[in-house]
Image (cartoon, rainbow, N blue to C red; front, side, top):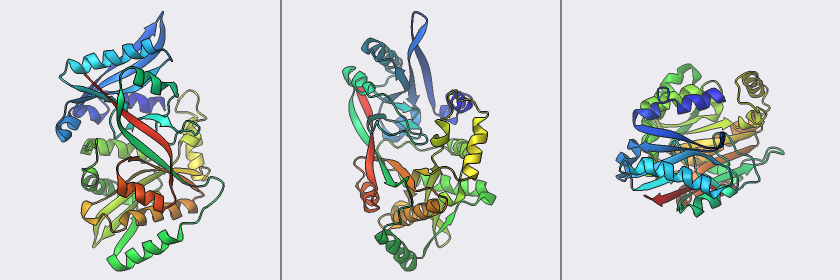
Length: 342
Protein backbone atom coordinates (compact mmCIF):
# COMPACT_ATOMS: atom_id res chain seq x y z
CA UNK A 1 0.00 0.00 0.00
CA UNK A 2 1.18 3.52 -0.77
CA UNK A 3 0.57 4.64 2.80
CA UNK A 4 2.68 1.78 4.19
CA UNK A 5 5.60 2.72 1.95
CA UNK A 6 5.19 6.37 2.92
CA UNK A 7 5.29 5.41 6.62
CA UNK A 8 8.37 3.25 6.02
CA UNK A 9 10.24 6.17 4.43
CA UNK A 10 9.02 8.74 6.96
CA UNK A 11 11.88 9.63 9.31
CA UNK A 12 9.38 10.69 11.98
CA UNK A 13 7.07 7.67 11.76
CA UNK A 14 9.55 4.81 11.34
CA UNK A 15 11.37 3.89 14.59
CA UNK A 16 14.30 2.63 12.50
CA UNK A 17 15.47 6.25 12.43
CA UNK A 18 15.97 6.26 16.19
CA UNK A 19 19.30 4.53 15.47
CA UNK A 20 19.90 5.31 11.79
CA UNK A 21 19.78 7.95 9.10
CA UNK A 22 19.23 7.81 5.37
CA UNK A 23 19.15 10.01 2.31
CA UNK A 24 17.02 9.39 -0.78
CA UNK A 25 18.14 10.14 -4.34
CA UNK A 26 16.24 10.24 -7.63
CA UNK A 27 17.94 10.02 -11.04
CA UNK A 28 16.34 12.16 -13.72
CA UNK A 29 17.02 12.66 -17.42
CA UNK A 30 15.19 15.31 -19.41
CA UNK A 31 12.59 15.55 -16.65
CA UNK A 32 11.92 11.80 -16.57
CA UNK A 33 12.73 9.66 -13.55
CA UNK A 34 15.09 6.83 -14.58
CA UNK A 35 16.24 5.51 -11.20
CA UNK A 36 16.26 5.80 -7.42
CA UNK A 37 18.40 4.75 -4.46
CA UNK A 38 18.66 5.26 -0.70
CA UNK A 39 21.94 5.56 1.19
CA UNK A 40 21.59 4.19 4.73
CA UNK A 41 23.72 4.60 7.85
CA UNK A 42 22.59 2.06 10.46
CA UNK A 43 24.45 2.75 13.71
CA UNK A 44 22.95 -0.31 15.38
CA UNK A 45 24.46 -2.57 12.73
CA UNK A 46 27.91 -1.09 13.25
CA UNK A 47 27.66 -1.33 17.04
CA UNK A 48 26.57 -4.98 16.76
CA UNK A 49 29.28 -6.09 14.32
CA UNK A 50 32.08 -3.64 15.03
CA UNK A 51 32.46 -2.66 11.38
CA UNK A 52 31.99 0.39 9.16
CA UNK A 53 29.45 -0.94 6.68
CA UNK A 54 26.91 1.40 5.13
CA UNK A 55 23.96 0.24 3.05
CA UNK A 56 22.02 1.06 -0.06
CA UNK A 57 18.40 0.14 -0.65
CA UNK A 58 15.18 0.94 -2.53
CA UNK A 59 17.21 0.58 -5.73
CA UNK A 60 15.30 0.75 -9.01
CA UNK A 61 16.84 1.59 -12.36
CA UNK A 62 16.39 1.44 -16.11
CA UNK A 63 18.66 -1.01 -17.92
CA UNK A 64 21.47 1.48 -18.52
CA UNK A 65 24.82 1.13 -16.78
CA UNK A 66 25.64 4.87 -16.65
CA UNK A 67 22.41 5.53 -14.73
CA UNK A 68 23.12 2.70 -12.28
CA UNK A 69 26.73 3.87 -11.85
CA UNK A 70 25.55 7.39 -11.06
CA UNK A 71 23.12 6.09 -8.43
CA UNK A 72 25.69 3.82 -6.78
CA UNK A 73 28.36 6.50 -6.73
CA UNK A 74 25.97 9.04 -5.23
CA UNK A 75 25.08 6.65 -2.40
CA UNK A 76 28.77 5.70 -1.99
CA UNK A 77 29.81 9.33 -1.72
CA UNK A 78 27.20 10.00 0.96
CA UNK A 79 28.43 6.98 2.96
CA UNK A 80 32.12 7.72 2.39
CA UNK A 81 31.65 11.22 3.81
CA UNK A 82 30.37 9.60 7.01
CA UNK A 83 33.38 7.36 7.48
CA UNK A 84 32.12 4.05 6.10
CA UNK A 85 34.55 1.75 4.28
CA UNK A 86 32.02 -0.62 2.63
CA UNK A 87 28.67 -0.25 0.89
CA UNK A 88 26.34 -3.27 1.15
CA UNK A 89 22.92 -3.98 -0.28
CA UNK A 90 20.28 -3.95 -1.35
CA UNK A 91 18.60 -3.65 2.07
CA UNK A 92 15.50 -1.53 2.45
CA UNK A 93 16.38 -0.55 5.21
CA UNK A 94 18.07 -3.50 6.93
CA UNK A 95 18.03 -7.30 7.14
CA UNK A 96 14.88 -6.86 9.23
CA UNK A 97 13.13 -5.41 6.16
CA UNK A 98 13.15 -6.40 2.50
CA UNK A 99 16.72 -7.25 1.57
CA UNK A 100 18.75 -9.02 -1.07
CA UNK A 101 18.80 -8.93 -4.85
CA UNK A 102 16.95 -11.76 -6.55
CA UNK A 103 19.54 -13.74 -8.55
CA UNK A 104 17.65 -17.01 -9.10
CA UNK A 105 13.93 -17.79 -9.21
CA UNK A 106 12.60 -15.08 -11.51
CA UNK A 107 9.80 -17.27 -12.88
CA UNK A 108 7.68 -17.22 -9.71
CA UNK A 109 5.98 -14.22 -8.09
CA UNK A 110 7.28 -12.71 -4.84
CA UNK A 111 5.66 -13.67 -1.56
CA UNK A 112 4.68 -11.19 1.13
CA UNK A 113 7.43 -8.72 2.08
CA UNK A 114 9.95 -10.24 -0.33
CA UNK A 115 11.60 -8.19 -3.08
CA UNK A 116 11.53 -8.95 -6.78
CA UNK A 117 13.67 -7.37 -9.49
CA UNK A 118 14.44 -7.73 -13.19
CA UNK A 119 17.27 -10.10 -14.18
CA UNK A 120 19.36 -7.25 -15.56
CA UNK A 121 19.86 -5.79 -12.07
CA UNK A 122 22.43 -8.53 -11.39
CA UNK A 123 24.60 -7.30 -14.26
CA UNK A 124 24.14 -3.64 -13.23
CA UNK A 125 25.54 -4.34 -9.76
CA UNK A 126 28.37 -6.62 -10.85
CA UNK A 127 29.55 -4.28 -13.62
CA UNK A 128 29.55 -1.51 -11.01
CA UNK A 129 32.10 -3.45 -8.96
CA UNK A 130 29.87 -5.17 -6.43
CA UNK A 131 30.76 -8.71 -5.32
CA UNK A 132 28.79 -11.34 -3.43
CA UNK A 133 28.78 -10.93 0.35
CA UNK A 134 26.20 -13.60 1.21
CA UNK A 135 23.41 -15.60 -0.41
CA UNK A 136 20.00 -15.92 1.20
CA UNK A 137 18.02 -19.06 0.39
CA UNK A 138 14.23 -19.24 0.20
CA UNK A 139 12.38 -22.55 0.38
CA UNK A 140 9.01 -23.76 -0.80
CA UNK A 141 6.97 -26.69 0.42
CA UNK A 142 3.55 -28.24 -0.09
CA UNK A 143 1.49 -27.69 -3.21
CA UNK A 144 -1.02 -25.08 -4.29
CA UNK A 145 -2.95 -27.87 -6.02
CA UNK A 146 -4.03 -29.49 -2.76
CA UNK A 147 -3.08 -30.49 0.76
CA UNK A 148 0.13 -32.49 1.15
CA UNK A 149 0.14 -34.46 4.42
CA UNK A 150 2.78 -33.69 7.01
CA UNK A 151 5.77 -36.02 6.52
CA UNK A 152 5.26 -39.01 8.82
CA UNK A 153 8.72 -38.60 10.29
CA UNK A 154 7.91 -35.03 11.34
CA UNK A 155 4.57 -35.99 12.86
CA UNK A 156 6.06 -38.84 14.92
CA UNK A 157 9.06 -36.79 15.98
CA UNK A 158 6.87 -33.94 17.17
CA UNK A 159 4.85 -36.24 19.39
CA UNK A 160 7.97 -37.84 20.87
CA UNK A 161 9.46 -34.44 21.68
CA UNK A 162 6.25 -33.34 23.35
CA UNK A 163 6.12 -36.47 25.52
CA UNK A 164 9.80 -36.64 26.46
CA UNK A 165 10.61 -32.97 26.97
CA UNK A 166 7.30 -31.57 28.14
CA UNK A 167 7.24 -28.85 25.49
CA UNK A 168 3.82 -27.55 24.56
CA UNK A 169 2.62 -25.23 21.81
CA UNK A 170 -0.11 -22.61 21.78
CA UNK A 171 -1.32 -20.00 19.29
CA UNK A 172 -1.00 -16.25 19.56
CA UNK A 173 -3.46 -14.96 22.13
CA UNK A 174 -5.30 -12.02 20.57
CA UNK A 175 -6.90 -11.23 23.93
CA UNK A 176 -3.42 -10.71 25.31
CA UNK A 177 -1.87 -9.40 22.10
CA UNK A 178 0.23 -6.82 23.92
CA UNK A 179 1.51 -9.44 26.35
CA UNK A 180 2.53 -11.80 23.57
CA UNK A 181 4.31 -8.96 21.76
CA UNK A 182 6.28 -8.35 24.95
CA UNK A 183 7.20 -12.04 25.06
CA UNK A 184 8.41 -11.86 21.46
CA UNK A 185 10.62 -8.91 22.42
CA UNK A 186 12.27 -10.96 25.16
CA UNK A 187 12.92 -13.85 22.79
CA UNK A 188 13.71 -12.27 19.43
CA UNK A 189 17.15 -10.81 19.94
CA UNK A 190 18.37 -13.85 21.90
CA UNK A 191 17.20 -16.28 19.22
CA UNK A 192 18.93 -14.45 16.34
CA UNK A 193 22.00 -12.93 17.99
CA UNK A 194 24.63 -15.17 16.32
CA UNK A 195 23.47 -14.76 12.71
CA UNK A 196 25.61 -13.04 10.09
CA UNK A 197 24.36 -9.54 9.45
CA UNK A 198 21.83 -9.72 12.28
CA UNK A 199 20.69 -6.38 13.66
CA UNK A 200 18.63 -6.44 16.88
CA UNK A 201 15.19 -4.90 16.67
CA UNK A 202 14.43 -2.23 19.22
CA UNK A 203 11.26 -2.35 21.33
CA UNK A 204 9.77 0.49 19.26
CA UNK A 205 10.51 -1.36 16.00
CA UNK A 206 8.80 -4.53 17.23
CA UNK A 207 5.80 -2.49 18.44
CA UNK A 208 5.61 -0.78 15.04
CA UNK A 209 5.74 -4.11 13.18
CA UNK A 210 3.16 -5.69 15.47
CA UNK A 211 0.80 -2.79 14.84
CA UNK A 212 1.07 -3.32 11.09
CA UNK A 213 0.47 -7.07 11.32
CA UNK A 214 -2.36 -7.05 13.87
CA UNK A 215 -5.23 -6.47 11.38
CA UNK A 216 -4.18 -9.41 9.18
CA UNK A 217 -2.53 -11.85 11.57
CA UNK A 218 -4.00 -15.36 11.88
CA UNK A 219 -3.45 -16.45 15.51
CA UNK A 220 -3.23 -20.16 14.66
CA UNK A 221 -0.31 -19.42 12.33
CA UNK A 222 1.76 -17.79 15.08
CA UNK A 223 2.73 -20.60 17.49
CA UNK A 224 4.63 -20.22 20.75
CA UNK A 225 6.64 -23.11 22.25
CA UNK A 226 6.61 -23.27 26.04
CA UNK A 227 8.39 -25.32 28.67
CA UNK A 228 7.54 -25.01 32.35
CA UNK A 229 5.59 -21.85 31.61
CA UNK A 230 8.50 -20.18 29.79
CA UNK A 231 8.46 -19.17 26.12
CA UNK A 232 11.41 -20.91 24.43
CA UNK A 233 10.57 -20.43 20.76
CA UNK A 234 8.07 -18.93 18.36
CA UNK A 235 7.28 -18.67 14.67
CA UNK A 236 5.34 -16.20 12.58
CA UNK A 237 3.57 -17.21 9.38
CA UNK A 238 1.09 -15.11 7.47
CA UNK A 239 -1.20 -15.84 4.53
CA UNK A 240 0.55 -14.57 1.41
CA UNK A 241 -1.28 -11.28 1.09
CA UNK A 242 0.52 -10.65 -2.21
CA UNK A 243 -2.05 -12.97 -3.81
CA UNK A 244 -4.52 -10.13 -3.28
CA UNK A 245 -2.11 -7.19 -3.51
CA UNK A 246 -1.06 -8.20 -7.04
CA UNK A 247 -4.51 -7.12 -8.21
CA UNK A 248 -3.87 -3.60 -6.92
CA UNK A 249 -2.39 -1.56 -9.74
CA UNK A 250 -2.21 1.83 -8.04
CA UNK A 251 -1.36 0.90 -4.43
CA UNK A 252 -4.32 2.76 -2.95
CA UNK A 253 -6.02 1.66 0.25
CA UNK A 254 -9.61 1.47 -1.00
CA UNK A 255 -11.16 -0.75 -2.17
CA UNK A 256 -8.13 -3.07 -1.88
CA UNK A 257 -8.27 -3.34 1.92
CA UNK A 258 -11.87 -4.58 1.69
CA UNK A 259 -10.88 -7.22 -0.85
CA UNK A 260 -8.00 -8.28 1.40
CA UNK A 261 -10.13 -8.63 4.52
CA UNK A 262 -12.78 -10.55 2.57
CA UNK A 263 -10.14 -12.92 1.16
CA UNK A 264 -8.82 -13.62 4.67
CA UNK A 265 -12.26 -14.18 6.14
CA UNK A 266 -13.39 -16.38 3.24
CA UNK A 267 -10.08 -18.28 3.30
CA UNK A 268 -9.41 -17.62 -0.37
CA UNK A 269 -5.63 -17.39 0.01
CA UNK A 270 -3.88 -20.74 -0.57
CA UNK A 271 -0.30 -19.59 0.04
CA UNK A 272 1.61 -18.65 3.19
CA UNK A 273 4.96 -17.21 4.11
CA UNK A 274 6.85 -18.39 7.18
CA UNK A 275 8.56 -15.14 8.07
CA UNK A 276 10.31 -15.91 11.35
CA UNK A 277 11.21 -18.95 13.40
CA UNK A 278 13.49 -18.75 16.38
CA UNK A 279 14.43 -20.91 19.37
CA UNK A 280 16.47 -19.94 22.42
CA UNK A 281 20.09 -21.16 22.10
CA UNK A 282 19.86 -23.63 24.98
CA UNK A 283 16.90 -25.41 23.34
CA UNK A 284 18.31 -25.72 19.84
CA UNK A 285 18.90 -29.19 18.46
CA UNK A 286 16.04 -30.57 20.56
CA UNK A 287 13.39 -30.57 17.84
CA UNK A 288 11.55 -27.41 18.92
CA UNK A 289 11.83 -26.03 15.38
CA UNK A 290 10.23 -29.23 14.04
CA UNK A 291 7.32 -28.77 16.43
CA UNK A 292 6.80 -25.20 15.25
CA UNK A 293 6.92 -26.24 11.57
CA UNK A 294 4.50 -29.10 12.24
CA UNK A 295 2.07 -26.72 13.91
CA UNK A 296 2.16 -24.22 11.04
CA UNK A 297 1.83 -26.97 8.42
CA UNK A 298 -1.23 -28.56 10.01
CA UNK A 299 -3.00 -25.37 11.12
CA UNK A 300 -2.44 -23.73 7.73
CA UNK A 301 -3.85 -26.82 6.02
CA UNK A 302 -7.00 -26.52 8.13
CA UNK A 303 -7.46 -23.04 6.63
CA UNK A 304 -7.01 -24.29 3.08
CA UNK A 305 -3.43 -23.02 2.82
CA UNK A 306 -1.47 -25.79 1.12
CA UNK A 307 1.73 -24.09 -0.06
CA UNK A 308 4.32 -22.24 1.95
CA UNK A 309 7.47 -20.20 1.50
CA UNK A 310 10.04 -20.33 4.29
CA UNK A 311 12.90 -17.92 4.53
CA UNK A 312 15.09 -16.36 3.94
CA UNK A 313 17.83 -18.58 5.44
CA UNK A 314 21.55 -17.84 5.29
CA UNK A 315 23.31 -20.15 2.84
CA UNK A 316 25.76 -21.19 5.60
CA UNK A 317 23.20 -21.89 8.33
CA UNK A 318 23.39 -25.72 8.27
CA UNK A 319 20.94 -26.37 11.10
CA UNK A 320 18.08 -24.35 9.58
CA UNK A 321 18.73 -25.57 6.05
CA UNK A 322 18.90 -29.22 7.12
CA UNK A 323 15.71 -28.86 9.15
CA UNK A 324 13.78 -27.52 6.17
CA UNK A 325 15.13 -30.21 3.86
CA UNK A 326 14.01 -32.92 6.28
CA UNK A 327 10.52 -31.46 5.99
CA UNK A 328 10.76 -31.91 2.17
CA UNK A 329 11.11 -28.15 1.58
CA UNK A 330 13.41 -27.23 -1.32
CA UNK A 331 15.29 -24.05 -2.29
CA UNK A 332 13.46 -22.28 -5.11
CA UNK A 333 14.78 -18.71 -4.90
CA UNK A 334 18.13 -17.16 -4.09
CA UNK A 335 18.67 -13.58 -3.00
CA UNK A 336 22.13 -12.03 -2.70
CA UNK A 337 23.64 -9.23 -0.65
CA UNK A 338 26.53 -7.47 -2.37
CA UNK A 339 29.52 -5.52 -1.01
CA UNK A 340 31.78 -2.92 -2.58
CA UNK A 341 34.70 -1.22 -0.93
CA UNK A 342 34.59 2.54 -0.47
